[in-house]
Each structure stands twice: as C-alpha cells, then as structure tokens.
Length: 295
Ligand code: NAD
Image (tube, rainbow, N blue to C red):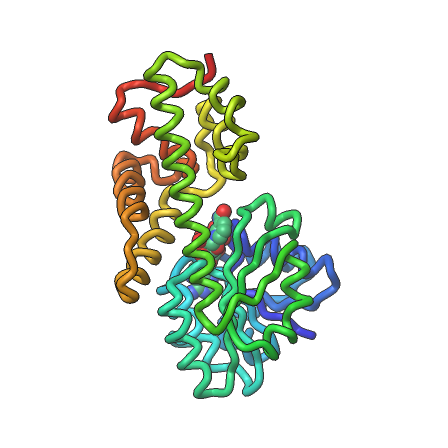
C-alpha cells in the first residue's frame, strides 16, 4: 500500500522513517526541501504538491503545525482534496482545533474522502522509538483500515469517538499536562521560599498521590535549570488556545487553562517561547524573586 506523508518536521520525520523501516512504500511532501531530501535518502519517494501525493496514495498522513497549515495543505490550492480518490483516507496527526477537524472532514466527504483526526502525545523521543500515544476520531471501518499503520508509530492507538474526538482527547491531555506543570512549579517555588531543598521535596512526594509522569519527567530538568525543548512553550500556548476556543464554543469552564496560558504568553513575550514547557517555573520564580535549583 502506498502511503502519503505530508509534514516532515520534528515529529513527522521520525514517524515517516519508522513507516519506511516497517516496509511501507512512502511518498513524502514538505515545504522544506531539506527534510524531503533526508527522507528520499532514507528510501521514500517525493512529489511536489499535496495534490500529487493524494492522487498517488490510498492513505495520506499529515503532521503539520496547526489548523491553518492543515486547512492549507488539505483544502488549499494544490491541496489533498484536489487529487484524492473517492474512498481514500486522510489521517491528520497534527494537534489542531477539533472544530477545524470537523470542517475539513465535511469538505472531504463531498469527494467521498474519509478523514480521521489522530493527534499524538509523547514528543520527539517517542516519535523516534515508535511508542507514541495516538488518539483517534472518525469512523470505525476507516480506523480498522489504518490501525496497523498507526501501530508502527504508536504504542497505544485508541479510537476515541467520531471525527474531532482525537483532538478533544489531545486538548484534554494538554490541559492536564499544563495544570500538572503549574502545580509542580507552584509547589517547588513554595518549598524554595520556605528554605526547604526542592529536590528533597520532589523525592519525598514522587511515589505518593502527587507523583505523576509530568513530575518525574520535568522536576529533574527544572532542578538542573535545563529548559532545552522537549516540547516548546509556544506549542503549548497553541494547544491551550485551541482548548480555550473549543471550551468557549461548548460553554465549558477552563479557569486553569486560562491562567496557565497567560503565564506561558508572558514567558513567550520575554523570548522564552522556545524553552521547554517545564520552563513555566520561571513565571513563578519571577513573581517570587527566587530560583528553584538543587542545593
Ligand atoms: P514542526 O514545525 O517541526 O514541523 C512541521 C512541518 O510541516 C515543517 O517541516 C513544515 O515545513 C511543514 N509544513 C508546514 N506547512 C506545510 C504545508 N502546507 N505543506 C507541506 N508541509 C508543510 O512541527 P512538529 O513539532 O513536528 O509538530 C507537528 C504537530 O505535532 C503539531 O501540531 C504539534 O503540536 C504536534 N506535536 C508535537 C510534539 C513535539 O514534541 N514537537 C509532540 C506532540 C505533538
């Protein structure tokens, strides 16, 4: 089966490489020709437009930054919709607004093209290992057709519900990660203010109820003052903005997301948008005029 892969960035590149390693025939496309060349050297072929890719493939995967990029690549001039055959399946693995996923799916359905939204969690290391968590929205029969492809890239592949549900799950994920990060930062700054070693506080609580994957992954980096990404603050702002827009359309309360996005935007405006999102602690540190680090 020929698979199209559009969007070869931090995440898309290793995901595409894993599909090649698994023996799939891949046709790739990206605005960045260096990324395309890297994949061609790895065994993929390439075509110049998303329209050409969709015309040559039964399954097309997209891994693009945000809603406008997916709209452009799928519905824009030279986009997927212009080449796609009836019955082909578009799997959008980008983290975008679920409202936009539904809009794009609606437009594609007029050409009998089926769409799944399948955003991922896990970041570059898990994209490289092929152990992402993939959350999927869309029709069950289309999901069954692409499940084996998704399992090459993910350790867990879950059909959550109808189209848009994958991105709702991803927003839920990002809200929980944001609130965990803020709770961790608030707590470690408080401990530091109290002149208690924040590293010992981390070790004391990590196996209790406050322990979490976020705490284990991010507290050691904060204590080492290592804010290299990882997952950039600017990307988390994008996801929380999608959460706020979606919440507004549903009349659902999001006070925690509203607070954390303000903290992240304040750091971004200071030039820290490319810091890892664990760098959120710097907002609390600025307020408290203190720095969290191991003693
Ligand atoms: P990225 O910016 O590194 O890559 C995006 C790629 O899309 C770039 O290579 C760009 O040239 C290409 N592109 C943009 N518009 C295009 C178009 N119209 N046609 C063809 N190519 C186009 O982004 P990324 O970090 O790989 O993230 C992709 C998605 O995955 C985002 O939605 C992000 O939120 C999500 N995500 C990222 C991470 C992470 O840790 N980076 C983790 C989980 C989910």
